[in-house]
Image 1: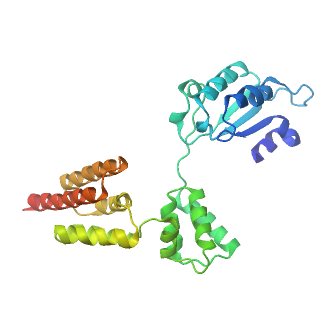
Image 2: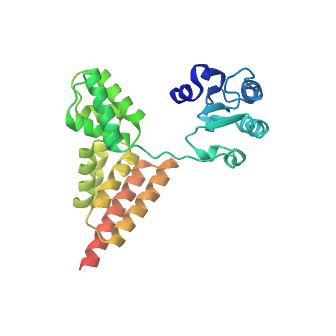
Image 3: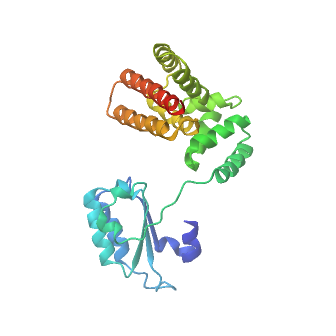
Length: 273
């Protein structure tokens, strides 16, 4: 709203309506509050020629009926109002509204940008955090500033010095050390031994197979394998992840993952022979 104050001055509230559409998402809000605000003009305003602005945050949570009603409001009051529609999933916005808007996509933040803000918060809150833990937070945030701050807050609330283990324990993500242990077991150990090693690791660490797959992806990309062997393994990992999303058995899919890794290793040895 700081930008609205700069544009409209002290009386910006007469020109701007901001709603969280995830809460006010019904058709009654569109027909009542939004339409009422859009249909009026500030007759006695010093800047009467300026457009009103309606900001709808998380608009992808609005019902289909509400979005259809909103489309008619946009068409009817386009000379008086401009709409700013914010959402996380553009496919949940009906095509009729999408065609009437200009799209702006915002990419994830750079690690350097998140690091500057995280360092500022750490200094302001006097958090005791190790460098490895800070790097882990930046890795887990994946360009999302809110996620990075939430992880830092959760770890700080637990008390004590924040180390790398605390970050992964608070978030429930598998530790990179455990992922490397599981992946090395797949590559080096015999099938049955590797299966038992990973199964024991999953039980002791409380790690899901889907999380192991995500962590393994980076390791497979950096592994020295022929192109066709790497493609074979990545394809099977994608299929296993899809099966897990449809409630397939983790034990069976773990065996399938082990088989895919062993087959990829055999392919690489065959091509090099």
